[in-house]
Every structure is written in structure tokens, then in C-alpha cells.
Image (tube, rainbow, N blue to C red; front, side):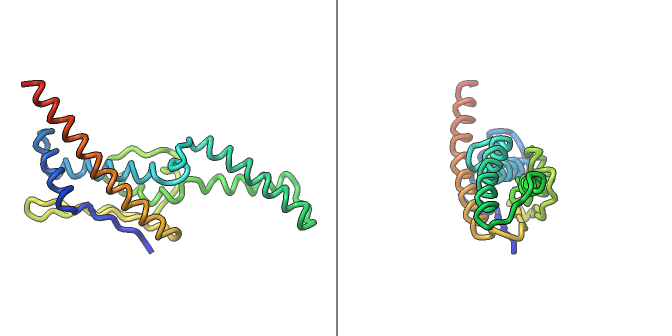
Length: 182
């Protein structure tokens, strides 16, 4: 149960080749840069980042929601839970923050992409395989988080499309800069 994203699209490969030429890098280095962008964007597209919140804001919001939920359950079920027990439960829930994004950690480390500390502290299962065949470089990034596979697949495809569109803007900016410098 894992999600694999292969950066092997022919249109994206053309854009990577143009990027390599304009930035005066090798094809391998340019492909790594694009894969690094993908990894950063994939981490940014997982909760709480998808909500455009910092982890501390998300923790505060989750704490408020969980407290309200547990307060309700304490009285409805008739079972009294002490505040100390509730604090332990909340601490355990807060530690889970960033576990889904931690599957991209292996790829980020291999591609030298910077990811937030709230993701790095978890040990997520994932991998990054770089294959070279002739003038093509293929990068396969895998996130092996054992839950939410379908949602993770949807998010990763969205991120790949976003990176593809982002390459258009990067190439236009590089061309403009090159034209101005002449």
C-alpha cells in the first residue's frame, strides 16, 4: 500500500531539458531540481499545510476541537475523564501531526530538499529511485504511509500537475532574463 509518482511525462521531460539548457545545468541536475520541487510541494500539500496554517496554528485548532469533543463525551457517556488523562490524549494526537507527509522524507533527503522539522521528526516509509537511460532521467518517488492511499494519490497527482505548470512560469522567467541580459 504505497503511492508512487514517476516523473516521466514527455511534456515535463521537454520542460526539464529546456530548464537544463537555460540554467546551464546537466539534465540529471535539472531533473533532481524538479523532483526536489515536487517533494517540497507534496509536503506542502498535506495537512496542516494544505489548510495554509502553520503547525502551531493547526495544533491549537486541533486542541480546541478535541477538548470540546472530549468534554462532550465526558458528560454524555457518564464516564469522567480527568484533565491529566485528557492532556495525555491530546499530546498523543499532536505527535501524529506530520506523519502523512513523512513518507516524502526519504525522497527529500536524497534530493537535498528542505522540509519542515514537524515532518523530519517522523520516520516515514518512502523511497526515491533515480534511473538514467540514454538522455532520459526518470525519478520515481514513493510514499509508503499505510493509510489514506487514495487521498494521497489524488494529492500527489495534483502536485505533479502544479509542478508541471510551475515549470512553465520558471521557463518564461528564465527566457526573459536571458533576453534582457543580451
